[in-house]
Amino acid sequence: MDNKLIPNVSVDSIVFGFDSVHLKVLLIGRDIVYKGVQYNDWKFPGDLIRCDENLDTSSKRILKDMTGLENIYMKQLKTFGAIDRLTRKPRDMTWLITINHPEERVVTIPYYSLINMSNGANNNLKLISNARWFNVDDVPNLNLAFDHYEIFKFTLKTLRNELRTEPLAFELLPLKFSLSQLQRIYEIIIGIPLDRRNFRKKIPNLNYIVPLNEKEMSVSHRPAKLYIFSRDIYQKLKKENFDFTI
Amino acid sequence: MDNKLIPNVSVDSIVFGFDSVHLKVLLIGRDIVYKGVQYNDWKFPGDLIRCDENLDTSSKRILKDMTGLENIYMKQLKTFGAIDRLTRKPRDMTWLITINHPEERVVTIPYYSLINMSNGANNNLKLISNARWFNVDDVPNLNLAFDHYEIFKFTLKTLRNELRTEPLAFELLPLKFSLSQLQRIYEIIIGIPLDRRNFRKKIPNLNYIVPLNEKEMSVSHRPAKLYIFSRDIYQKLKKENFDFTI
DNA sequence: CCAAAAGTGTTAGGAGTACACCCATGA
DNA sequence: TCATGGGTGTACTCCTAACACTTTTGG
Image 1 (cartoon, rainbow over the protein chains, first blue to last red):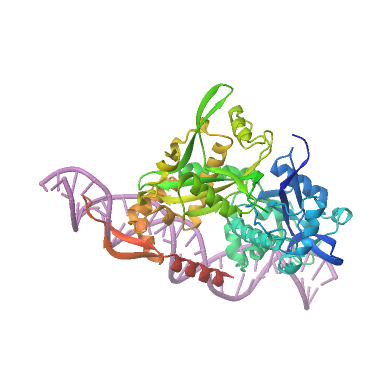
Image 2: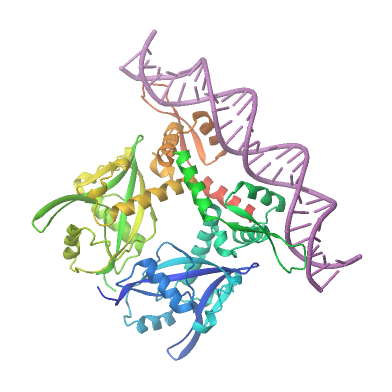
């Protein structure tokens, strides 16, 4: 088994970023010419996988190659494999020609990733490719390649659901964060405003949200207390609860 | 695009059945000879997909071909594609040889299905193949082909989680069911005993569980009232709640 | 001293939990 | 009449939801 490509299986990365205000998603600009017409559209970073790598490995490698991003949270979603997913838009044929098997069938395995943008995380982005962050409410529906808009909608829905039951919010925040930042993530992703006081009342019960003896610096209003997420404590509590309930 | 097989992509069906007492899973017996030794082991129904069918279609077709089961609830799970998933157990090489590409890489897309066994649903099973129901606690770990035990564990965990938030229990029950049957499913799948009275107190709030003017027949104890699940009402309520919360 | 976001308590209603006895049927 | 599973109510606790003013900082 060598590192040749598997012609029927690709991975795609749907990377969500949070800049303390908006939830964004990362797209790669594509300039193609099909039958003499030029198209400028967008796609998620992704490519065919290689014979000698696992799915997760492949997804990480391709994301790093295309955007420079690495060491970020990733989770696999369901596979998209409609027969016509690469041929619904005629211009997409150019990709099939590029990879040298027109009329071939490719199923794609999407992964979603979460990242904190205020972290300098996107410094490399522009160097490596024509990547751009789009507000999730502004994703250019008609200008996405292949079935990528369908994949996007499914992913966003999944993210909104999983945020309720898994500690994903902390992947989108800086290491040290304020309770207002945390609340804003829940409000943006779930889509409903939350009551300040009620939200804060829950925090002391969640022992994995650990208060620090630090405050925000140089903000022109009362500085907020900072917290960190302790994955250790989170996993310990989760295990205990599981054991207890069985 | 014809109906030839895609050599790198398969689907597998993990079918759960409920017989009013136990949760079971369906396995296909396999008799193979590898290097002169005979092996009798088990696998999930599954096969390579064809070029001319969608993933869901393929999964339905293959399940029907291998077991006779059709028109049952199905949901796609995450894809399994470890490099060595087909070669960890030497005897599994026989399958790669059968499909005519030894050393080939195959990723598999698992679907889980739910079915009510008291329905006569498994009448065809024995006619078509050497399929057998195993209690989920009795699945022959070491006797499963490929990475199917890993897939099984993941699927069972997913089922236990999704049962809490989606109306899956009704797929496992007969059309008309008693509250005791419903309770038993939750107890078995979630794994904890529930209080009878508290469980029943919640039912009247769930308007999609509709009481009938019917009772169990010919049971040697007080006959239970029967209920049906109304998917219409369920979806209407779900939509309303969604609209409300946004 | 002004603007901007942080921080803080109380009350009322609803949901969850613990718990034990009588009822209807077939054999 | 017995065995078997079906059916029912109450009291206590805990969680949720609604709601408005004061504090700290930089400019």
